[in-house]
Amino acid sequence: MRATALCSAAGSVLLTALASAPAGGLPADAGYRPALADSAETRGTALAARRAAAAGIRFGSCSGDQEMPGALRCGTVTVPLDYAHPDGKQIRLTVSRAEATARDPRDPKRPVPRQGALVFNPGGPGASGMYFPLAGLLPEWKRIGAAYDLVGYAPRGVGRSAPLSCRDPRKLSRGPSQAPTFPSESYKKERVAEAKAYARGCARKGGAGLRHYTSLNNARDLDVLRAALGEKKLTFMGASYGTYFGALYATLFPSHVRRMVFDSAVNPDPERIWYRTNLDQSAAFESRWADFRAWIARHDEVYGLGRTAEEVLHSYEKALARLAAAPAGGKVGPGQLQGAFLQAGYYDDYWPQRALALSAYLKGDPKPLVQQAGPYPEAAREQENARAVYTAVECNDAPWPTDWRVWDRDNTDLARVAPFETWDNVWANLPCAYWSGPRQRPLDVRTLPGELPPTLILAAELDAATPYEGARELRRRLSGSALVTERGAGTHGIAGGPNRCVNGHLDAYLLEGRLPLYGADCAPRAEPRPVAPGDRAKAAPGVPWRAGQARPATSSATSLRRPV
Image (cartoon, rainbow, N blue to C red; front, side):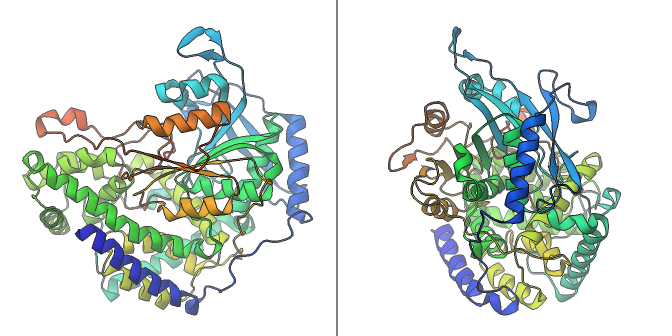
């Protein structure tokens, strides 16, 4: 009951905040649909695609630093930095591929016709899909891997694909940090100064080319990749942020689409990109945080953190206070604890191990918490790269309020009822208030009846990272799309997971082109099982690869907000 009431209250505050947001710098006419057919960028994309089709991709062994198994093959595709000037500077995107097995996994003697390449993006902005072809090794993906070449790639700016960075990775925080739920004015000033410095670093290190790291260019890159793979029409699956530029692709190039899957959809309404999207996300995480605490309370005999969600919150706040006074292992402070538990808001696979770590810490054993939440210096370069791309794309994509007072007003109001992620989300996005580059106006995602082949949208009803309304909005905007909902579930990224109903619809669409006429509902997956302290090995950090992840999970948890 409390979770429902809290979510409703957060929604009311959110609507009030959004109604007044334009006063601080968001224009009221943020959405538009330009004349696409005759733009310089459209002509440049067509030229780049013709060149890529002629050149193809020379797949060979993956380089050592890509850490790819020998069965995978890697290559590159060349795209213009600026599509309005396709003969200007070029950048190379790295691509990985596992060829279709062409054999039915249930009957290896039975051949399966190849259906082309399935290109995947796991989200971000800032995530790499280079590990996606490994999905073909999992039982849930074997039928798809029999019919399709599984293709992943690193989008522009990510990994080895013209990588971006806004500061020296060695200067990333490696020690404990604070995470005040209701920050003081002095703390806010410190974070504003950090945001300004980060924005300046992006401008200095990114130079004149920084403005070209956008969602629209990610969509254009996707069309060049399609051509380079020799595909006349694209079969694509995007998760999380990948659904947004996938929707842009569907709007820009509807005649180039064969099949598209949108897993955990970002709300494509141009008025929500990206400032309001993040307010929506902060409100939604409060409800998911309440779900997690209620699950812990139901297993109080295992964890001893409280018999109600309120008692569990008290235990969590007790840990925050202790860590603020004496960081665990000298590494884990309130910021690191909040980062680790925010990750559990994305994936309920993490619930048993996070609860176990919190329980152990409060009982005097900090090791599990340090292992799960402690900073990992060896991942600093990858973390900084991901943050730089996330920041550049979201700041370039759309107008943001440029007056700190707007951010402070909206998020102070929201934090009164949704404190869990609100301020952490602010600090992750605040560089956009001080961005020196030009801002685009978001494209009005929309297709007319018959313009786009039928597409499949997958969504978990309680997903906090991409709230469910985003999937409903995308369905309204893409004519002929079908929405499959995992009811009563909140894991972010549901394709290829443990829900057989969801996977059945995914297989039917990708393998046979069949969609449920009026959409479909699937029962939720089973809740995670609690893990007792004596079974700690069963709660080892990391969850199986799934569509919403860039790569197999590690035990690293940082204070950097995970992108949508």
